Image 1 (cartoon, one colour):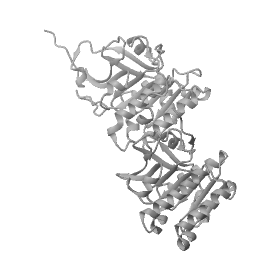
Image 2 (cartoon, helix red, strand yellow; image 1 turned 30 degrees about the vertical axis):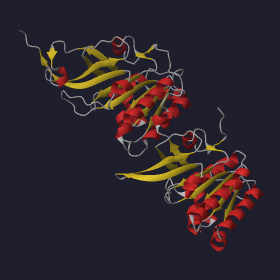
Image 3 (tube, helix red, strand yellow; image 1 turned 90 degrees about the vertical axis):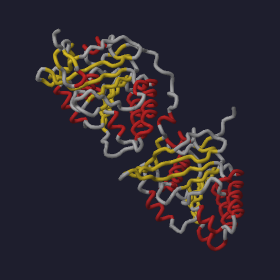
Image 4 (cartoon, one colour; image 1 turned 180 degrees about the vertical axis):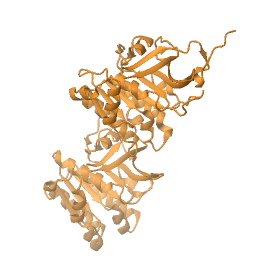
Length: 480
């Protein structure tokens, strides 16, 4: 099968959506309301293209001066003033459009494409051109003539417009692709979105995807479940056991955690989920580094908590065996968090990850409907990269018989499940741990007391003579 030549945008997530970039020599509409990021996207692509040896012509049909545009672009890291006027040329066609009409704009741009030897043409202000057209035929003619000359010159074209054009509009029917930028409010939050509404002759990731504008320009985060609908590599077949960091738990689980497995510890606040995670991370090494991907404990607080359990996390960090990252739940994008986690796993060759917690990650989701698909894709990709995952999830209610599942189809997402509960027994409040699942392995289902002290964590078989333990209020079994 013949592969179309691609022009990389330099916007990593956008190239992933486009399965490698724009089709070279094709034409695209980039549409969205004012402030949605169209101009940033186009110029970011342009400056990246000239860094790779290309030449770019930016034609503006807007009244705004180029000096004002450069003022805004200069705040972004991709802007390089030394390229302006050389490899990337800015031309204002506003006066030509106002005074002489569309035909003269076409002639002007034809001359500039040839003179500049442009391989990318950006036309900013398609709405103004549309308003000058006397009919839809004139609009089609304007686009067709520019496309024809650009294609002959081997030039890829981007038309920017602030109007939301319908699928049947003359502009849409003429171009090869349509990229739409938008913004949606969720309560007090506002989330930027990008969608590929048309990609002629090219596979692409459909649907809405999150994006944001940073100091580096536009950053696109493809929906993780669409990007990794199938893991990017074959699943790791090495099922050797790794220590959980708690010897007693290892023996109950058949020798430890299977390599490249996902373990979920569920329990209420204060039960010891993070402490179990610290034990897991304390077993990492320089050869098999660990990562704390946390949401509620800053690295400083985590280090202090670990020291109380007898572990020196700072020494592990200093040796390169452990990396601590913290993502406050006040802001953030769900797919951005997933992308950051996978990037850090690759960058540091991580083999152990503590995600503390999945609930904290879920707070960054604008819609909980897709959480099951998101977590399934994330865990599948981590497994495929040879990572052993220990994740936590806080469940509501300190006591009581009801256990709320973090997400539907939980069992299909994780390999091992640990349930932690508080139990009132013999006038004392005790911590209970029960192994609910170990995939494809025999395990001990006993009810265990979780003991936390300055030596770490230990498990003891308990509640042998008690009943109604999981209700939260255990009582001694009555003798007949």
